[in-house]
Amino acid sequence: MTKPQKKIIRVVDIIPITQSKKTKRKVEPAKELPAESPAFISEVKFEALKDFESPSRQHEDSFSLDQEFNFSGEDDAPERTSIPTRKRGKKMVWGGIIAIIIFIGIYYASGVLAKVTIHISEKKYSVSYDGSLQVVAGETVATSTAQIPGELMTEHATSIFTFPATGTANVKQKAQGTILIFNNYSTAPQPLVATTRFVTPDGKIFRLTSATVVPGAQKTASGLKPESIEAHVVADQPGEAYNIGPVDKFTIPGFKGSSKYAGFYGQSTSSMSGGFVGVGPVATDADITQAQDQAQKQMQDKLETSLLLKLPQDVTFVKGSEQFQIISKNVDTTVDAQKNFSVSIEAQATAMTFNEKDVRALLKTGAITAGQIPDATYEEKDSSLTYGTPNIQWNNATMSLPVSYKATFWEPIDAKSLEQSLQGKDESAIKTSILQMNGIDSLSVSFWPFWVSRVPQNSSQVQMIID
Image 1: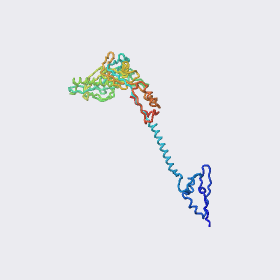
Image 2 (image 1 turned 90 degrees about the horizontal axis):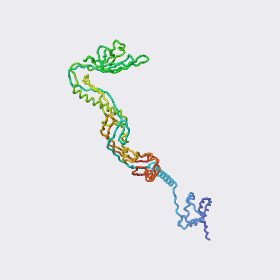
Image 3 (image 1 turned 45 degrees about the horizontal axis):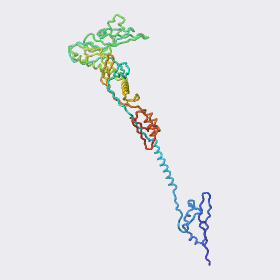
Image 4 (image 1 turned 90 degrees about the vertical axis):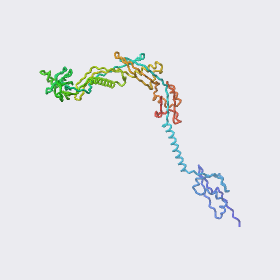
């Protein structure tokens, strides 16, 4: 029996051919092996068929017809690597997020956090003066004679001061107080002499202590409207009987029998007091002397305080540049119910004042003339100005004023305008712009962070230091 021949089938006929990029190649299915040829399978290397595990891999792994295959059992084909698509996508997303964060951080640090510090030190000139200035009322500034204008200010007042009476004696004191005197008679004023009598309804007489003029009544459509004036009165007789309460109407006996009697009258709104007969308090000579001294001092303090309160804001007053004058003084030894007597003073205070701006202007002009500062454009950075005790000649309204002055001057810089002019410039341009200015001693510029090289447009990111 003849040995049957082996049927040879080419491997390329059973290996699927992949699709090319442009055309698809139809792969014919492998023919079924006949049952009587099992030897074929044993001769074909099984490893060569491992790529046929599933139909889906036909699309993942493709081969060219020209590719050589080794069926000898040695795998010379290149190793294939599979990259998971989902993991690759996640890495790309996270990488993008990190890149955005880094970009935002750099932008924020460069734009928002960027800081530029410009430190300018100016040349400074020291000025000092110790001497006297002349303050002359009504005059102008005169550098050649160190003269500035002054102004005389005056305050006038009359005040009554009370003091305790420390002595005792047999005394006869008259009650006293104040009344309002009315004119309901005519529009003409009415003079009344001192000691003019005013009588209460029960006959008690009080007299004016000084002459008084009662103003005229006002004429209205319905008639006269009375006018009044306050006046001081004293009881005609001593004793407590004249210590009376308010009185609705005092009559004037001097006008009795004329039409003025009804048109002029008095009225008191407070009690009369001080009437006394017997052993009581009296003011001794020592009380009176001490009271006059104290009253004068209190009056002077009062007028000086009043002057200071009325001074305009730009006017200067130096202690010792005032004059105090007593116009009149009266001691009333009558002791009141509180056991006090009184001192009345009329006085006037006058002060020589000046404007401190004129002092500084004069001293600056003198410093320029002496070559202590370059020119008038330089301004005070800081200063100390004190005054000594003045010497005043009141007859010609001139005051010699000692002055001690120390100051530092520099060229003023408009920091805001300078900052705006430097926006967008780099360090070299900044130095060129600033160092060409007058009065600059030194300059330093610093940028932060290190990659910032120009002045930001936002002024809040620029620190300008000038000293």
